[in-house]
Length: 244
Image (tube, rainbow, N blue to C red; front, side, top):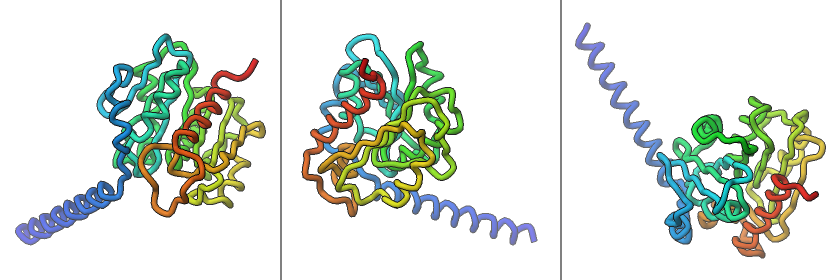
């Protein structure tokens, strides 16, 4: 009897290991890798990698901090160019490496980063696609910890009601973004504050919010990836440093 139980247990362990390994392989093979153009930015002195977390420091004392969650199955390095552009405007940017590149599995990364790097400046949270939804989950759960929310090609999850938060929220989407569910994008506006700033990027798409090539089924934009990044940066600055 004991031998039979042991045999069954070993079989279950082997099956579980094979399923886990298969799942890991599938996720690895379907992860969008950062484009080679990001390597040069990663090599800059102001870019530091701390146990997978990418920290992009501004040239002088930071005016604010932004924790940015990557899109689903996208390497965090794919957003280093966006982070570097923001850092040149005085914002210290943190891009965490998520488990299996899925931010939904660890939407409290903001807390860990804040505790380790906290200062007296304001802290913002944002993300692209699934990363934006994950950021909204954290902001809804801990409303007093973030100074603002930035959603790129994203909308809040059904469980994330930010409507009553007295903080700025920026929501950006490209006209050629066919990966965002437009009905869901519209219906979840009730979960965001009434004064949320909505920006439609003419000629922009879903993939151009990062540097990871073209996402499956996404449409090509009529502007460049660089142009879309600069539009994003200017609008984020408008939230973090509002016009006087």
